[in-house]
Structure formats: C-alpha cells, structure tokens
Length: 411
Image (cartoon, rainbow, N blue to C red):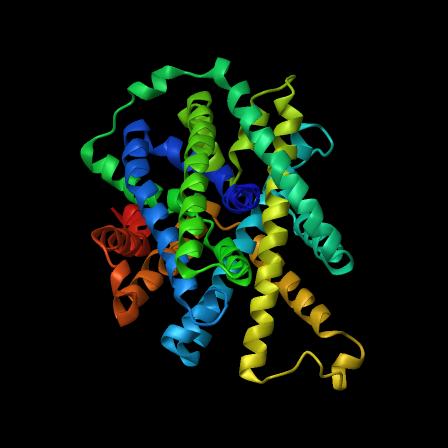
C-alpha cells in the first residue's frame, strides 16, 4: 500500500494544478444545478477514461509510454501526427499559465500598492516572468523538479485551508438562483470541458504502468493495482476539488465572477482583492502563483521533450549536431529561446484564458483522454474483453467535449 500511496499522490498532484484555479469561475457562472449535473456526468467519464488508458498501456507488448503505445497499436506515422497534436496542446496550456501568471502578478502588485498601474498590461512584466522561469529551468532542472514535489503537497494543504477559511463568507442565496432551461444548457456546454480538464491526470499514467511492468508483475496484477489507484485518486479529487469549487462559488458574487472572466484572473486573485486586511489578501495570490509556476514548469518540460522528438522524427536536426549555429547555442537553448519568444508574444495579446481552455485545449484533451484510447480498444481484436457500455458512454462525452464550449458560446 505504501507504493500505491506514492502513485495516488502523483495522480492527485498532476490533476490539482492551475486548472482548478479557473474552474470555480466557470462553475460559479453556471449555477449550482448545472454544476451538479456536470459533476454527475464528468466523474464517471474521467474515471472510465483513465481506467481504459491503464488497459491500453498494460496491453502494449513493449514497456512504453502513451505515445509508444499509440505507435504500437496504430503505427509510427499515426504516432508522429498524434505527437504533433500533443505538442500543440502542451504549448497552448503553457500560454494559459503564462497569461495567468502575468495577470495575477500585475493585479497583486497594484492592489498591494507596489505599483501604481497594473503592469500586466505592459509587455515587460510577462517577459520578465518568462525569462526568470526559463532561466531557472535551464540551470537547475533537477532542483526544480524536487521543488515541484514539495510545493504540490503544500498546495494541497493550502487550497484545503482556503476552502475551510471561506466557509464563514458563504452566501447561500447563490443556491437559489435558477437559470432558464436554454441558459442552463448553454452553461452546461461551457462548463463540461473545463470541469473534465480539471480532473485529468492521464499524463502521469504512463510512468506508473511502466514502473509496475518493470517490477515483473503479471498483466492482471498491473491492471488491478492501476484500477485501485485510479479509483482512490478519483475519490480524493472529487472531495478536494468539489469542496474548493463550492466554497469559492458560495463566497463570490456574480459581479466578482464576471470581473474574473473579464480580467483573466484566477479565482484566488479575485478572493484576495475582496479580502483586504485578511491573510487571504496576501496568501491568495501566493498560492495562485505557486500553482501556476509548478504547472508551467511541468508542462514546459513535457513540451520541450515533445519538441525534441518531433525534430528527431523530421530529421531537421540532431541533438548531437554541434555544427554551424550550434557552436554558439546548445540545442536546448534554441528550444528555450523559441518557446520564450512565442509564449511571450501570445501572452501580451491578453487572450481570454477560459476561452483558450474551452475552445483550444479541451478538444485535444478529449481526444487523448476519452476518444483515442477507447477507439483503439474497439479497433484492436485482442482488447475485445475490455469493451463495455461504460466506454461507449465515455467516448460519447469525449465527442461532445470536442465542440461543446464553442457551441455554448454560439447558442
């Protein structure tokens, strides 16, 4: 059980990132009834999707990660294009985190009187934040990864403390607000993809299954351990995330939620702004920044590795090639500078964070989490024993995620 606990915390920490800082905003705008409906639909969807990814990884003949399993079941060409989509998805998530860091930091410095104006509207604050983060990653990646592990556990405790701290500020009148059926349906379409994103931890599944296989466990034993960890992780996430979301929703007015949407702020920054003179005024932005930084670093490392693989596959360059410009800049440095430039340019455009998550990030996540692994289960004959009605339900919700946010905006 000791080994299982470590993996449960890994899954839990992967899901509890910056995503939940924006979920309460979307949930609060939707109303309590829509939130409950989305919860009842999303929880089994996420649970069965992660279970099925465990099946796909376990049934792969080689001890490989997610992309390796796709290569085995669908071929190298399909694996390459899936890696392209995977890299684009990670890059879009980096833009979300960079925008959140820039906006929350600018708001915090203005609210505390450190600056007269909100520097998030200038081009320099976002550039400075990115330079510091990427420089730290470049010179101390191993130290940064250890730091992330400690901070993730700290974030769990702090967010739980915030949930409890907000209870005296709850306004139960919010629960009595009922939207029309048409409006509720629109909010349902908008909330569904954001909700499922906040409960997703499938990137961490590969390392877990690979470790179990390396221990020499049988296929049945690997699946049994994987399913148990997925179940416990899911239950913990339901309790933890839902408590945080509901506590934030009940503590904020519709006007404050609207401000968060318009100003691209995380829920903790909005709570800090209305909590002058309380510990939350300072701890709220700190927690928000820690969550965004850890999420940015983890995603950045994944995007960098994905970019390396793509460049290798395209044969445009090689990490070992030191000719030409590589005499002056290492391959890693070129990638880091390229990432910095593109993320910075998009960050200063101040694109709506929730729209990026719903319109651009949710569709590929739905594809990787709910659609592709289940399609493989039904395509590959030797996986026939794992087919079920639950998977058909999951793939239907995944297909809905592909266009639900855009449909909710248009209706």
